[in-house]
Length: 439
Image (tube, rainbow, N blue to C red; front, side, top):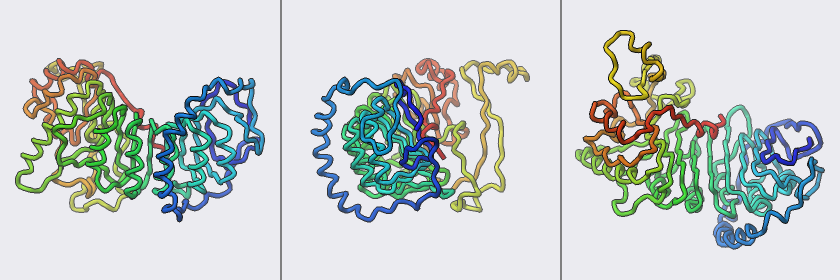
């Protein structure tokens, strides 16, 4: 294995099979998806592990890092060694790798102070052993990134496996980014596992998961996660993950007062005669909660025009053929960075390119999961947008079907935004979420 400089804190292993005999390790074949047969036994142990986690973490974290011996200028992995040979590594990435029991045991013995683990397109042959060793050997672990790839015979992480690995952190997860390119129908236990970490969560990114009641789960996270700064709930290329709440608490304020990014597909779906009245009531509740998030920089309640997310008609069987257009079309759309009046000159586009930016909007077929009756917040002064006047850090707002919407349609609204959101559209761009998606 190649020597690793003393100051390196991040290690990436690509196509690693648990061995460490020099050079690049290659994998001869991809195993089948992990099957979990004894989940009931593990579930019975979960309550006990959670009960002892706080005590274990307190004892471990109290130990000073100074007890670790100063590493040599170069560190070399020795086959079968269980010494702390890489004490400086804080972030480990395993990409397109396969780990068996021996490989996991060897791996975790190297990283006593591991804080972040990323698994991209990798297979774990024994999820239970993997999780138990992770808890025992890496007590400081607080960041987990899993991106599961289901196509091209690559390693796949089973949907139930997510729930098992969520038991691994003794301290509680600060960062959870869980992504799958195929829809994963998870159990109620998986949902409960996520909610166990609301006290410590700072970043939560979910993509490709189907839950029974998104409205109550998202509401619970917002109500009870005091440290949450970034919440991303993303759709897959085909399947929708849409927040469809019916009401928000009128007495309980969201606990996440430090929230900086709220990115979630929102729709208010109702099919009865008083749908409009209920939507207006909910909209006021939403404005009230959002108006208290004074650190908010990005509010996305739909799809932004510069997202990479598009529907691929060849990969989707869920389109209504009578609704879908025969082909997609594109048009250039210009957006103002500021709110100055446009000149009447026909050459205004050329004269104002420095203050404007252009995006290409694609007209694409709409799949079945987008109901005709969906609506998004109106975001106008007439609808109560004035409650958001304290969001002085807000840079970006995204609403579904923005081109057909009233947001910034009136001169009064534009003037209000310019006065109350001074940083709005000031060249701000947050593409951090794209680093989570690896397919």
